[in-house]
Image 1: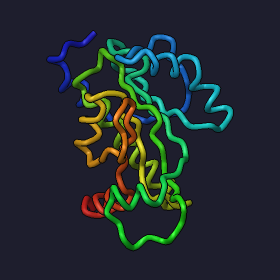
Image 2: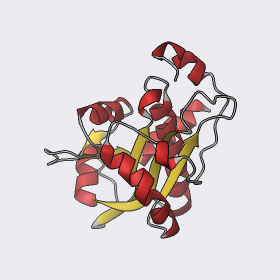
Image 3: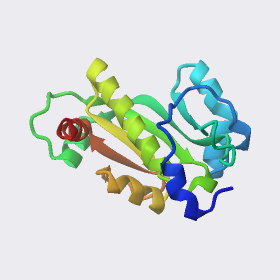
Length: 189
């Protein structure tokens, strides 16, 4: 397995393609047993039942030294109460509805042996792109995540996510407004 000194090699891999195929699930291992169990036992069933979509980052063929699955994330549709959305985003000019549509990144994990390679950031970036497309096609004001612990909360906070009010225990729901991501995308071009 590569050492942390080979992180730059892993980041130099050619662009990857995320896919819904579930190969290599049995050997996946991250720091959270709950995520490992979900990926091995429930991800395929959830895909087939249209409950959520699991996107998998497989190892590149030219890197057999890496685990078969580098990471994964799930996307699902959800809603956020209008009061919570306005409070977190400080938005004042929103239609008067009880709740607004949103996209949930229900789970996001990278293989424990790939720590420091930028896999989590790559997965989150891809999830953002897919969520923005969902928003463009059918609406959606935010992306919601469940931060499992302080490390996850710090990770999502780096990218602009804010903890929802009254979230004292783990996991903590966090939110980023879709307009923030769309504006950042516009500035990139």
